[in-house]
Image 1 (cartoon, one colour):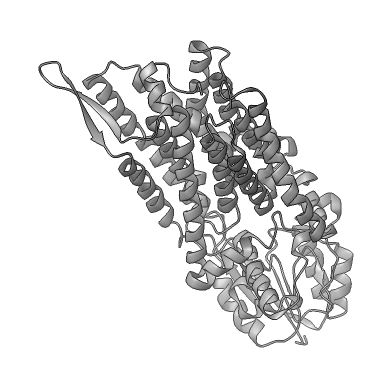
Image 2 (cartoon, helix red, strand yellow):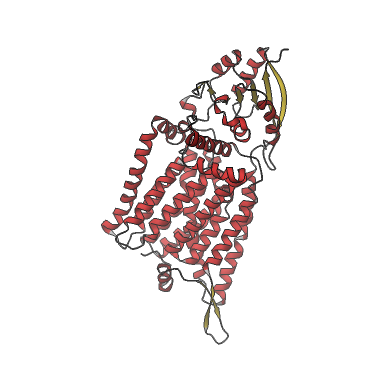
Length: 541
């Protein structure tokens, strides 16, 4: 394949089996010697830095709402499998198949609590970094692969996802694995096994988190472009077709078996996702703050290739990789939402990091062989201190950007334990995850819908509002008037207008009395503190 650097020696090295890395030094008499540094040690150093920077965040704050939701759901999925207990309609509002990541995350949570679940995400993100090193190394040489891995490993969103117990890390790893498989096929004329494996990984990535299906086209084009000039022709065309066929064969029956709930969930959370109120400039600006370093370097790599090798497959490949970083920002800018943006941009940057690694490799290769090249290499390594510092700060901010719920759970727990009635809690997933009563899911309602005794839901948001819209105020007021809930806890920060309507109904009903005003404090670096107001049924004024 024609993806190696400009010099013949480097091109051959890029396509050869991976040997130990080499750093050149010049002896006084002019003879050049090679100082060998095992490539695995360099990669290990990158992984150690990534792991250390993510591990410092695993206990930085209490569970985020999404973390609590998926881990709680995973425990319920296991209870359903082992004991046949009924389940909520997770497929109708989850943005990933509830039978994939949630049970895996719940296993880790059972072993090590929230910390264990977050460490599982770190393992997935370390795997994505290893896959990036392998992919970029096969395309452009070991040095490009190492710098690509280093740049991605210390990015703020990467470090955050390595300490965040949601499906994102798992899906990113699977997508990275699919990309590595299509590149690893190399110049083989018969790459069927590699493409089948890539199709399986791609299907699992899509099912784990529907949002990342946006990057399927990047993997398919990567499979096509890397097959030129060799093996080319029909062999190249068959690669993406095989991947599509395998993914279709796997996903179509799964969706049909899952039924209308899965179709509704995919539509509401992904295909027909509700628009937000953020300006496109806000979305693009936030994306730039997290990914700008890699995007700039990746674009430089693509431009350099077009200048030196115009029209070659390598130039098209680098353009594809650099452009991948724009997919999520452009898509979310069109929707006007920054929701989950800090997570979703990371996969696009994974692809762009390959082009960035190529750019750094070309910069080093431009230096004369000998001490000057060694100095240039060292300067590039030292320059990584800037993205490391930037990523460390950004990841800390991302990992502590939600209120700490410890005080709220400490006060709500005894109140819940002393009642067998129904509970209305704004964003109840945190309480459901932390409290033993969370396994009794039929008792819990949120401000998006009310759970009836049968387990069915009513009063939910309209389809136009998406799964995050607030419930119908009239329905909630009716159930308050009928004394449906034993405890009600609102924080007036998410579904504000609905909270006010519920609060007014509580004040009109003499059977409800405020019993606690609980600080819902800021995380170590989180937003301004607020309060939860808790009402209890049964007290008379």
